[in-house]
Every structure is written in C-alpha cells, then in structure tokens.
Image (cartoon, rainbow, N blue to C red; front, side, top):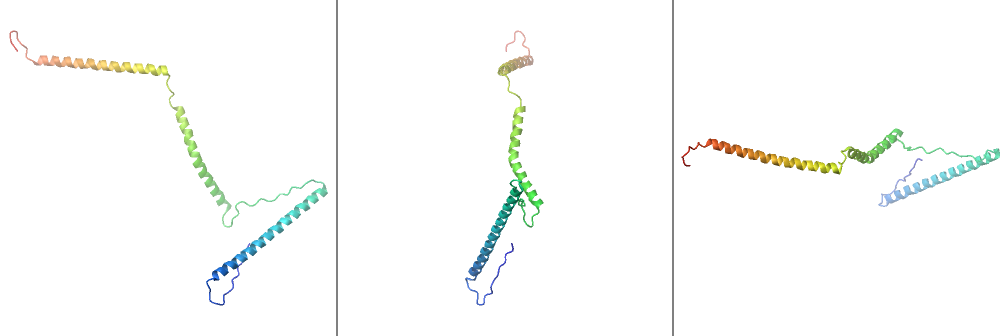
Length: 174
C-alpha cells in the first residue's frame, strides 16, 4: 500500500515546534491509512463470509452436502528483493549448523563407546592370581641369579689376586 505524505510550506520563520508539527501530521496520516486498511480488511472478511454463505446455500439446494472452502496458503517468505532460493539456502545453512552442534557430541560419545567396547576384556581373577605368582617367582629367580653372578665375580677376583702375588716359598715369612 503506497504511503503519501503532504507537507505544508511554512510562511513564517521556522519555530522550534516545527518538528513536533511534522511529527503530528505524519502520525495523523499513518492513523488514517491504518484505519483505511482495517476497513478494507473488514470488507474483505465480510465478502468472504458472504461467498461462503452463498456456496453453502447453493450446495444445500443442489443436495451435495456441506461444501469445503479451500483458501490458498500464504506464500512463504514473500519479500521483495530476496529470492526464494536465498531463503532456502539460508535455512539449510542454519539447519546444518544445528546438526553439527548437536551431532558432534553424539558422534564423539558413540566413538568412545565403540573404543571402550573393543578394548581388551578384563582378565579372570584366577588367571590374574596365577600371573602374579609367576611374576613373583621370576623376580625371586632374578635375585638368586644376581647373587650367584656376584659370588662368581668375587671368586674370580680372589683368583686373580692370588695369581698376582708372588708365590711364597716354604720357609719364607710374609
């Protein structure tokens, strides 16, 4: 609906309340146009009601029953200057962002679930006890082997020291 504004030219010097006067004129014109739009809407509603009554009377007179009045849907997102494809693309973008925000934590949770599921199962308690006994036995054997090797080193050192000393002849004193 086109909006028309009329301004009157001031014959005197501009006063400080000129802005208030212009504002009042604009508000008055807007009120009038809103009132006209309401009247047009009421007339359209009355015409639609009359057409519906007429259709019902015609259907009852012809014996067809109650007619169904189908109104065309409002066109979605009709805005001048915005193509329908741009609206579709922007909706798809925001849906994609929402799916990413919601889907990423869900995908992580599913991945963690499968990782936990594929990990090695817990050992049988009897098997665990047996492995501990074997480990203690191996540790004890390692300690004994270390003691034996230490004793061999000690004996080898004594043997080399004995060979390094000059042999004492009988009757010699140290």
